[in-house]
Amino acid sequence: MIQRGSLEQLTPVLMTALVTAFALTPLLLAADAPDKEILHPVGVLILFGETALRRLLGKAAHTPEAKAGTQEAY
Image (cartoon, rainbow, N blue to C red; front, side, top):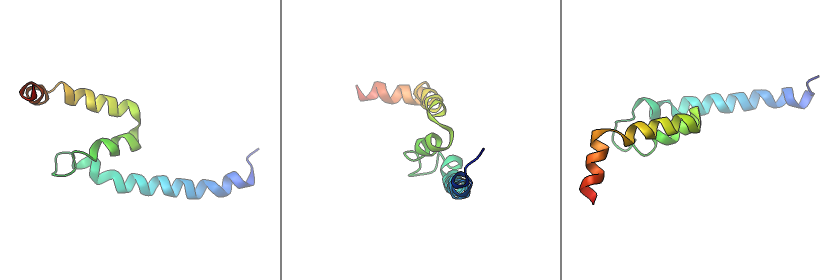
């Protein structure tokens, strides 16, 4: 049996989650835009979780540009 308090709190929690997802959508869609490269992983982590972030960072680490950048630094 669902408690009355649970039902009363469900609406604000769902509204907060929906607005957060709506606000983070531009970060997900404009990953290559200037000044968004730092916040894009944050948006991915908040919306999709840690496994999606690991996949995102894993792909970025294996690109030729990323490898060339690390070799030039050393």
